[in-house]
Image (cartoon, rainbow, N blue to C red; front, side):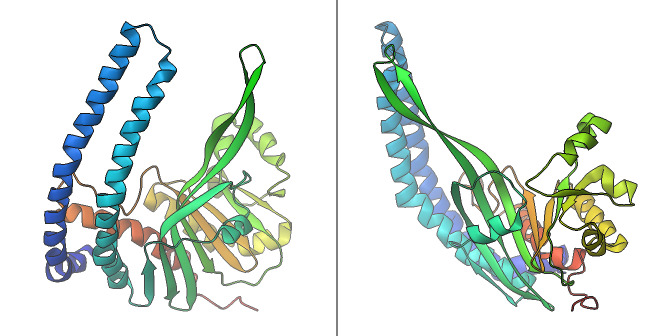
Length: 327
């Protein structure tokens, strides 16, 4: 694994020249964006005062809100999207190759929906599925791919208005998963599914949580393990008690716990069709540049580097290159 000292040297020699040019572009974009935000705020405030003063229905605010959304959307399409694309090609792509030359990066691609569904980690529907920042290649003996993905479930309901004389369709979306989604070869051959989830039920409800865990038809049968520390953090489901225990060896359970503790995040895993899937939730976009602070800030580059290392480091952290059990 690359060190921060190596990254600092790479930053000076390879990244800083591109970042200087990108920062000049950022300042030009910022000069266009700040007046746009101010104008949008004036439109919304003036419209709100007007609506309240004349005692109008607040639904009228849809018009000025739509105007402001169009202005900001136009700014995004014309300026920020191009800027972000250049940043990813000139900076994120270089950081990926710096970490491991055997990896490739595509800012527009993402892990396929079929693989996400194959993982069986999340039981909600994936009605809206997208992502970006796709990394793929081989680390040692292990083929991997990962990207940021955003998944939502969509619910449509019919709303009655005006005493039931009219109806309209209302669409609500609910987040299923936002974060890094990793797929890699696993070092053991197996036929059944094993799912490892954060044990929020037992942490919240104690013994009642254990009862709730056992009622989960989507994920399968509750697997009982002989590691109390692991079972405090995770709940395991599978289709075969023996095979799930075979997959989750003592050393692998320790590695999963160490990985979780090192990254200070809940993680979701599954072992399906001789692949390992790892989902790591994030509450922020991972590889997007900002426009309000200088690009020449090493701490930002360090953060991008660390986020990539979380996913790439799964191979080493879970010892996926060990092949002694493979059939």
